[in-house]
Length: 221
Ligand code: GAR
Image (cartoon, rainbow, N blue to C red; front, side, top):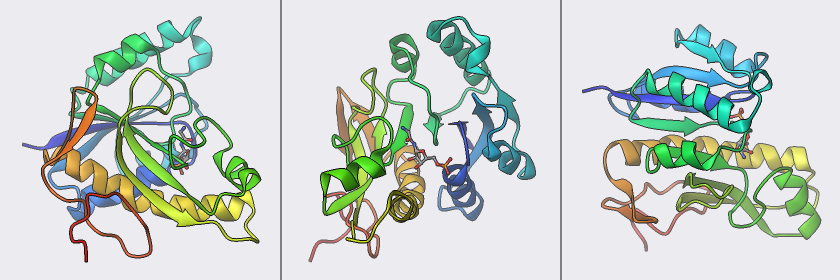
């Protein structure tokens, strides 16, 4: 049976694009993006979804009096599609506890840092300010505390002396596009799941060239 993804976005949509390609190529097998929802009408990712023939919805947070009202509307829209997984792909809104609890174990996010370092915004500039040697991206299950849910996979990239936030962001984004589709494939195939606050693996995560990733490697020499 075809598995269904609902993607939530706020902007550019490059992660959406990498996930879409993975669905089309079979890297994420038997899976369809059934809807892309944005909280911003002008999100460029919406055009990418439309071009691919994916239904889109705009649920503008500004139209709701409270976070709870916005999240309730979002939940109504999402649940109409009966998704197997709800995927935050550059979705820049904090979600309320009832919303997150409703989707626990079926709600995942990608964040542009090696969590728990640099939760929140402006991660690349903050990493440079701190002088870290490694930076990266994290795919995690979403729990009520912001950017603090159980970690599924991380990709680390080096930080170079002449980096600026844009250059570093581009390097991290490339890693995001590598790990997010693979993480989704692992979850959808049942190889990775959330059990009582911990991530359980029953199959190894694929090794990626040029990227230091998760301990669950396919082979360790
Ligand atoms: C990505 O770097 C993603 O990790 C980040 O927003 C960007 C979206 O890019 N997400 C967050 O910061 C969530 N807290 P995209 O629209 O091109 O996928």
